Length: 336
Image 1 (cartoon, rainbow, N blue to C red):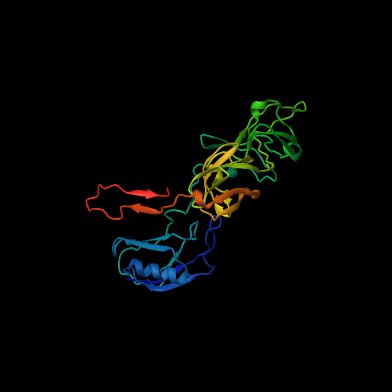
Image 2: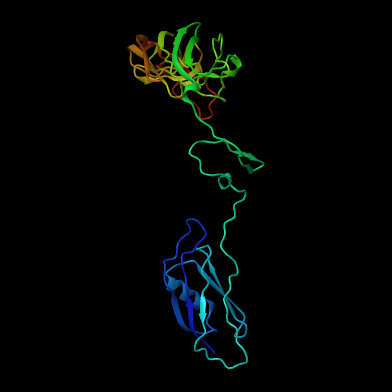
């Protein structure tokens, strides 16, 4: 026997939000499909007729008690059942049973269930609570309002130079501020700023922000006072101590800054709050300008260093001029 017709009615009744839709059709009719057709033949007929991918067909049994299983892998959801048309069926036997049933429906598992499924849509921020990954519903008004009037603002930062490498900052601001000094954490660049005095007021009943963060800019001027030694040989390679103020106090702090002597970089090897040590580069005889660039700011000593020709080591002669290949003989040099 054979099935003269196999009719498949498909609609877009998907119960999965935003799942891909199968193009709508009234019905698709495949006539004369043999019960002995392979799963690939049936799969190609269905996928090709619908013009979609993601249809998998498997078969089970033989001519007696044969079944086809159709799975929608790219178009999940509740599909309308196909229909089998058994008209003009050629059959020679006692009984024949034909049918189509739904084995399983497409679904999406949410684990854990998002709090959005337990609340209605809100137009303002609200407080959400989860306990051991389980969301808690809100039985009353759980909305939250941001109020800029209660925010912290920095209005002014003034500084006064003090001891070498130190500045006293006066920071002024507005908002609900704490009156406890330990509640503040003030950083100037990468350095911690300790509080020496605090004058803060807070209205009765005001709520404090949890770990608020506000920033402002404070500019420190830089200056150069002297170099030691103030002169050296044209060959360079010796340490020079540059004294001044506003200079980075660590060698790592000089990573993005530079010292130059006569336009050539002086490599930093040590630094403190009052001075920095660098290796003098080679130069030409005469007066040289010393320049420091820190954070876009410049400080210059126009005649800060002098290159002296005779101050550099030089080799004038070697005695003797020959030696045994075994070595172990003494040489003397002049001019070093």
